[in-house]
Image 1 (cartoon, rainbow, N blue to C red):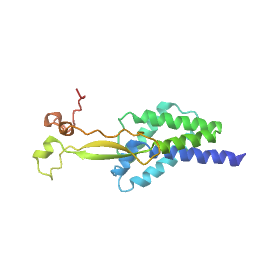
Image 2 (image 1 turned 180 degrees about the vertical axis):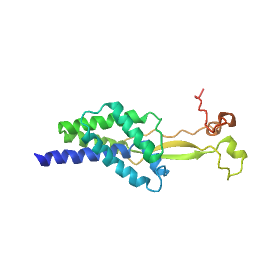
Image 3 (image 1 turned 90 degrees about the horizontal axis):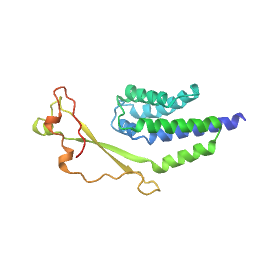
Image 4 (image 1 turned 90 degrees about the vertical axis):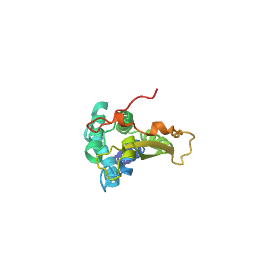
Amino acid sequence: MAGAAEDVRVLFGAAVRAALEAWPALQIAVENGFGGVHSQEKAEWLGGAVEDYFIANADLELEEIEDFLGELMTTEFDTVVEDGSLPQVSQQLQTMFHHFQKGDGAALQEMTSQINQKKCKVTATPLMTAKETDVAEDDVDSVEEMEVTATNDGATTDEVCPQPQPSDPDTQTIKEEDIVEDGWTIVRRKK
């Protein structure tokens, strides 16, 4: 009996790691070294930390999971996740944990398989602001924005990841009037 429980725990750990590896916010943080020179090691550690968090806290609410993941992203990767993915990943992890608690290894394997099929490669590239085009390159007070694109990582499914659309050059330049005195950038909705 203990062997079956250990097998389900291994499946739960693999599912957690798959979900985190497929999370675009974490991919971008690791790819751009937001966690320092050891970003990749921190991402690997994060999987074990999340798994242990669930094991130590049997009846977590969704908000608690979101808070935990958000705190880890902030402290370990200096990243505030504001793309709406935090509740989605938290819900996915909570569902995995419920399968783990029921001993449903088949459901965990299925979730892991689906995540791996849908996994996208996310890249972020810096955008030039209008202010940067007029200022010398060594200006340390410039604002840097990132454009995020997702591409299918060779998965067997079609159109899982939204393909980047060619963009108008005007949308890739942040106007100088959108950068306020304290260095923050005002983000406006597209019309």
